[in-house]
Image (cartoon, rainbow, N blue to C red; front, side):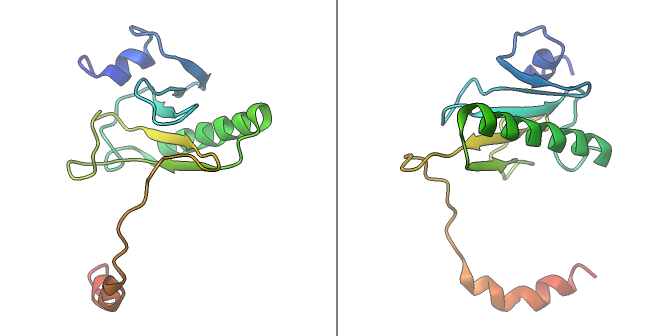
Length: 133
């Protein structure tokens, strides 16, 4: 996609801070990091989010995510990660090209990444599951 910054990174019109690359995906350091080694993993082809990516591409992204985490553990001793994706207009997705964040976590870091718990939803589980049938 012409105006997509991640597509520009994928085809090297913009230089990524490349960590690792596979035939179909890139892993690079986030340009707006919240932690050391905050990394993004993207497919080289443009997919808007989780709703339009083929399973085979998602598998490739997941495999590269795993390899990056293994690299960071082996080379840097990092032993904790948050891996997440924002998909869609109500999810805080800001770049509309499928991407996963690898957020290394460290003891005592100041990152606050917790949602408000809603235990009252448990009583709605039967109704919620019924809607999926």
